Length: 280
Ligand code: ATR
Image (cartoon, rainbow, N blue to C red; front, side, top):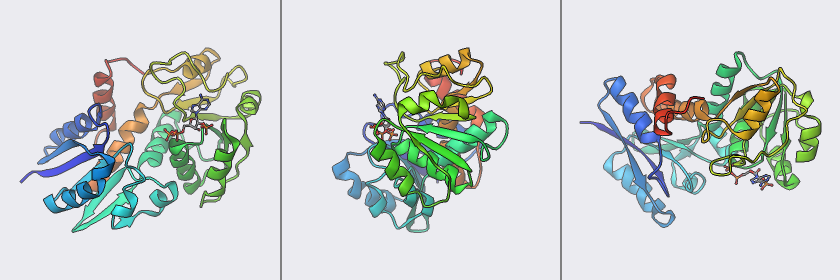
């Protein structure tokens, strides 16, 4: 009998995870199927109980359930607990265990594109929302030396820093300070929604002070090249969009379910094709 996996969210119609995972199951000749489930918040508890009862082997969790699902699971991995969000649920016999592969997916994709580990580099994260938390805590957990946070609302950056359970050196910056001091950084990670389609001409900060040997990683993948990436490229910097992060968070979930890390290049191509074939 085929194993059943899925993703829950609201909305869920545009999720690219089913294409990515079903292609990977097919490529690996595995008897499994991944289905998108549209679950409203008021149905979340019933849905989790239902998924356990019908024997779902594992699932992904997306907006708006990543935090709300936590008390409904049997166990939460410590990193997911610290991040305060679960994007992957693994079934262990009759128990559901929650993980977060967003931060790890990002860091894997960043290391791969950068060409070496980024842990000893001077890193700036722009933004202090959920995505920033996953990335900041994962970098800290992995032993990053210096990760500064630039955010519009200082209190949110302060909260992110003060709740981080792993040791890391961090200075907090306003967006203006981030612009001024940009030349001090090797790696700039853009985690806000600024620049995302349809507002493609916006940037969270101006990059006139960026170094030509710097690297900008934007977690946005639609458009494939955001304005901050374009501006950074003009000044000689290397850039990457969020496609690798998306593929890797999915690949790491797949690995947790099956023990096999699927072909992430292939996963990226699936998403790219679905987005209209733009190259990145
Ligand atoms: P996510 O969970 O996707 O990371 P989020 O939690 O809503 O989203 O976080 C969005 C981040 O983008 C925040 O850091 C937010 O800044 P504030 O903390 O000041 O709200 C940042 N952000 C969103 N729109 C912004 C804008 N127009 N200018 C500056 N920062 C913005």
